[in-house]
Image (cartoon, rainbow, N blue to C red; front, side):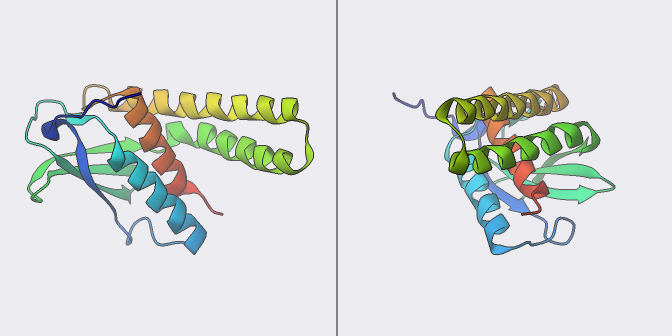
Length: 162
């Protein structure tokens, strides 16, 4: 399968996490965050609506229980900032973590069919969170579903308590 190259003006080239508002965590959680960022940067389609001056840098922080998407050009010049309430994601993130925990436990003790059922539930919740994120960004940022999935993975990694 070949991957189509994204236009440099329609992608994220860098992602930073504000340690003052989000904080650092355990080495395992930091590894999950770094992996999520690498996956996202490796393949994404991301364009703030009304702008075509990418590639972009995304700076994530939390302000008053809102995730701040501070979008800048690759040279650091501000483009736009969007605030997304984290409240609409709480339930799906909580359920996703619960199913993930069950899935990883099942790998050690359950039958393949039970593992597959949990994996399907895990994927379904991940898709639900990705769709919710894409909907919340609609009219603000143009992105494909795979990018929404990778961004949701990063949001989960930011919430993960280990």
